[in-house]
Image (cartoon, rainbow, N blue to C red; front, side, top):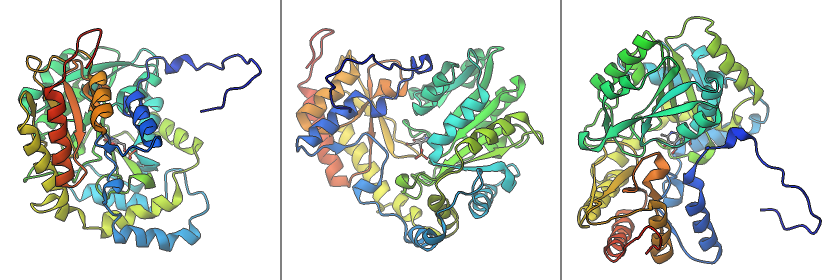
Length: 418
Ligand code: PLP
């Protein structure tokens, strides 16, 4: 934040494109947590899927590759990325049964999925175009679509159906202005893993209307208890799909900023892909040291399965979080099949919350535990919260018990809260 100045200047102001762009994951509640930390308080951050602060180490194979590459990784690369990284991504995806054919030229490496979502939507959407995005969503998708001038149409995922979307309802939302459907599987924030049948229904809908499929699969290998991740491009082999993936979660190196897009099912020389390449070239390239981590991670790092199996950290943390939540009256969550989060419902009869953001602010002030309110995920009612289950089981259980005690004595009215 700039220091106040004595001379009066006119405010600079922002582009109107930013109107309506919301990204509450790093919004006022997060800001309040930063202030409390600055004042010396320890905040337990259950708000974000950043494994490193909770003792998840970067896999040795990835660190070794990065260290080895560093002395020669200081120049720009091709805009789409270094060949070894692109080859490894193509190989990784085509290792899945029936995945559409991926050519190395169909892969673009980016500074994380976050950057690539922006590029993909900027290259696609005109002001007034429509895009179908799940509710709840990972809010980057809605924010980036709004920033592109598009109208976001949210399709509901149904808690009573394990957070699966209803494709008939989705179909009713398609208009002549619809350009694309976003799918997130395994899902953030709900943890739902979409079945092959569900994905096939979505693919048929897109095919009927000539829509682009945008499939965010950054949690692709983070699944529990035998759940099976299917890629949308495994069932939609003959139609345009962009598959998004990266190392942030599956290899726990979110700070490296390494992600990719694989484009499958497009016509050769599709102008959309040329537009995407143009935007990729305007930012030169993704960070080259991080690109060297990709092939090492995809080919040589096998540390994830042990974390997901009984006794493994992610498995046990998920179990501890589910157990602790189930002990709180009026609180319920669908057990996630994948991902790193629980999307926790509050029974409105027992916990009549009118402002979920106020609830997480009050919890933060009272218990120094940071959660995210459901409406930050474009959920339409103030009756959900998201918890990232990244701390060890004991810390998580303790924090959730504290949350339960807090909630027990907590009331809100429309005007005065807590
Ligand atoms: N997509 C989803 C569904 C996510 O949950 C996240 C991060 O939490 C991202 C994309 C961003 O990933 P990256 O670190 O690659 O930018």
